[in-house]
Image 1 (cartoon, one colour):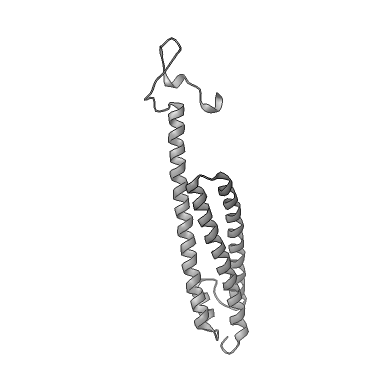
Image 2 (spheres, helix red, strand yellow):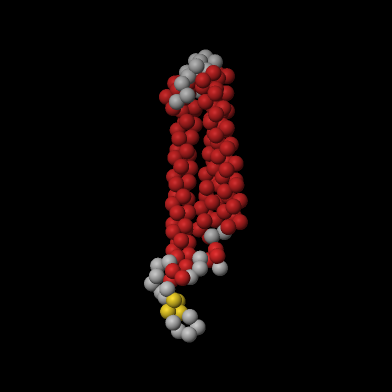
Length: 161
């Protein structure tokens, strides 16, 4: 591809689309985290829907780039992309974009993982609160109006109350 600037420009466009979609995803993940920390359910629902759209956009951008690589005769791998870039006139600029993409992808992966951990902690806290309400731990007996202790197992689940 050396000597032909068009493939480099075309590849740059594919990589820029990926970069744009990853930046959008990073921003959405940041809003998702803020909503989780603030327990803002409407904001969390909006962020979740937007995250789904951003992931779809990212998948489409990756598919276009992979299709381009295959049509250009390169493997659909990181090495295939590196080889394709090496054959372009503007290879140094494309390598910089590739490196930025990799960094951004790691940032998004880490942010998504951190949000998942935060969700898991919130779920554990919620389960703990529900266990207390259900008295499933058996630590605190309940009493009848006459002062007699009632076994914890005889209570009804919240969903059946």
